[in-house]
Image (cartoon, rainbow, N blue to C red; front, side, top):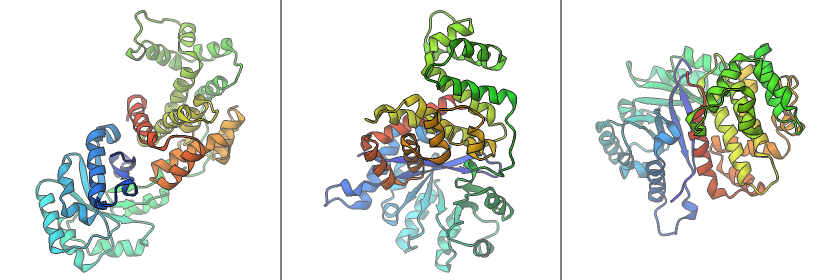
Length: 404
């Protein structure tokens, strides 16, 4: 059985990755009617995690996984490695004696327990006492309600996780309330629109990316721009002579490297360099996500029956977070670099064919499976192939994105 799997990052107080929550699409609609839905979902979950290998999607980080009451009673979490997962108990789970017995067994065997979308109720006390982490949804509860719930918890008690944190202001509030972990898209939005200047070196990198997207670019101009930047020259020669290219003879000049790599590979390479150079002081996950988006967009383009350039879509994906990286509006950044009209339209207005691919990618990240299906049909992409492309993009990003 196949399943869609996406990940959403969970950060610590220093905006470093603590874990990922894994989102699964249960394909119960595709199962034969006489199979129990929860059991089928459990099989999908365990098979996909075991077959995929959690290190493929979460690396060395923990994976938060949601479990229904039925799956907990069936002890499904025990199928998975305790060192790799956090057992997330959904908010609608009733603390019956049977459920509490199952959770105590799971906890006693060394699994971390998290309570999802927590709202304090006296009957939840047994679950609270065995919980390692409690998640508060900042869209469901007000700050006053969350503060009240926290006061009713044991002290010392479980770690606190703030979810659905959408802005840096909310992140700051959660920090002040004593939260330990944070989940949401605050990290990929501009912190303050303060017009941080793009340095000369950074602008030259973006200019090289733009030059490579011109239909008839001047090779001599590219050679000149790259050769006069010591940092790019060093990285280019190191990259071209890496085991990735499996060359017998080393390449020692910039011109040789440029000719050997070709336009498409140079577009990817320079986009990576530009993003890495712009990202100083930002969470690594922001850059990692940009890399995933770029590769995911490229792979979807290669599979689609629509006539699009995969190299253009790679750039759309990897530049889709430039506003968060630069803390500037996207239109101001793009105005400084002569990207193609199609790319600019997709990045600034989220319109056009290229934007449809990007929206699909973002919908996949967020687990909005109905929209993923709708856009896959629109873009003539086989829906069943999409999960493997996402995992390939994650693997690629893990291999190329800069580490903290």
